[in-house]
Structures are given as C-alpha cells and as structure tokens.
Image (cartoon, rainbow, N blue to C red; front, side, top):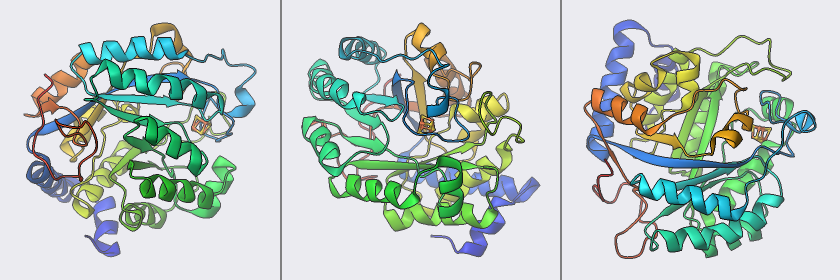
Length: 343
Ligand code: SF4
C-alpha cells in the first residue's frame, strides 16, 4: 500500500518518472495475473435512467428527447449467446438505473447461466438498489457487480450526481456483504475535483475492500450541463490507473473506452499503465447508437481491437478470475492462476 504523499507524486508523474511508474505497474500486474488481460462482453440493456448526473447524456432530464429503449430478456439472452460464441465467459449487463431492469434481468440471469452450463460470470452494472433486490439477483446467479462511486468527495458527488455518496457507499457495502465480487470506479478530471480527492478515491478502494476499480477521464458530452467544460487528460487517468495497481496490485482495473475516446491509442496506454481488463461491446447496432454514455460518437470497443492491442502489448486474453471450473461460482480474488485462455 502507498502513502498519500507517494500517491500524490505518482498522480503528477511525467517523463521518466511516469515511465518508471508504468513499468512497476506492469511488473505487479504480471506478478499477480501473468501476461493476461481479462475479457468481458457487455450488453447495454437500457438507456433510461432515473438519475440526473450532470456529465451524462442519458440523465433523467434528457429522457424525453432521447430515443428510449429497453431490451427484452429474450434479446439479452440472444446477445449473451453471441458472447459465448466469441469465447468470452463474462457477461456484463449494464444500463441506466431504472426499476424496470429488475424484472428483465431476473428473467435473463438463470437463462444465461443455463446457456453457459453455469460456467459464466454474470456481472451487473445497474445502479443503486435495495439490499433485498441485490440479494435476489445474487441468489439467481449474479456473480459480481459494478457500482462506481465516481467521486469520493461528498459535496462534489452531491453537486454533480444529485445523489448522496453515503447511499452509494451503503449499496457497495451491501453488495460486498452479500458475497458479490464488487467493482467501483472514478472519473478523473471531473470539474471541481481536487487531486486530494483522487487520492481519497484510491484509498477508498482499500477501505471498502473492493475487487475492481475503473478510471475514466472526464468527457464533456453534448446535451449535458457539463458540455462546455474542458475534457479530462488521459495522463492523469493513466497515472491514476498505475497508482491503483501499485496500491492494490490484486485488483481488476479496466482499460476503458473513454481513454480511446479522449485520445487515439488511449486503451493501449491503459494497458501500459497496468490495466488488465477490456470490455467488448455486444449491444445490437440500433440500441448501441441510442446508448449515449459519452454522446453519439463514443468509441465502440470490438473484439478485434482488443486482440490487436493485447498482442501488441505482449499479453493474451483470458476468462473470468472469479470462476472455478467445478461450480462456476466465485473464488477469492487473485487466488487462482489462469483458468482458460479465450483467444
Ligand atoms: S451516469 Fe449512470 S446513473 Fe448517472 S445519469 Fe448516466 S446512466 Fe444514470
């Protein structure tokens, strides 16, 4: 674990200091995961959201103007079959926060498990829910859950998300207590954010004991209150990824598409900075265009792109670290070696 002053120095590293930081981050990734990148397949199940984040085009205030969609459970299972056929064993179901998701995923989860003979990590990213709802989904076979805290500064959180940080943290603790493998995430260069609060973000991953954490540079998206704010820099996001790897080497840290949107080659740099997860998009083309997470021209990550990047980085793709071959259920993070290679 790093001290606050070490994290501060890493977040501002440039030139040879940054290269040394990235080299150490890659060394630690190799020590804990071998030369591998974990591959996920994502299905974006709805673009409707009850929350009103100032940086997101799918915010509640845009609901009427947006071309809304809800995938049916049949469609979700069909897309999950595409994920299986691509040799990927992590199905990420992601969408805006809306109660309607619950009925759909409750129907889809057992069917997806059956499709994969139980050998699947079902990863959800569907926002805040009541503990009893998380429990129902866990009992149906959900393995893991992403719930990004976005910023750990409680005032900034409330100002930009119009939601309380405490509520979010309560949900994260519920998920951990229920035995989910849990991911959080932060936005770097968020308007109003200080460097000290990014250090808090990094320390929060340890306090909570989460298994995964993403870092996305702020993207000023059209039709949002933040559309005129300056874009975040990839350099700060990359330094944050590397500092996270040094702080908690056993965590899963994705190289997110926002890095590529901010700068061509950004996801490759994410791998250079010690990231070890990539997500391929399996949403159908018409829904994909309506899922406006960074606006209409977001970067869509495809399997070919991931394979090219990983090969160029002397890495290869692999499946879930949270599955055992016998049960298809979670194992302790970092406990196992490679389960199987998926490409
Ligand atoms: S960032 Fe997530 S929670 Fe916030 S408005 Fe967008 S979809 Fe909803």
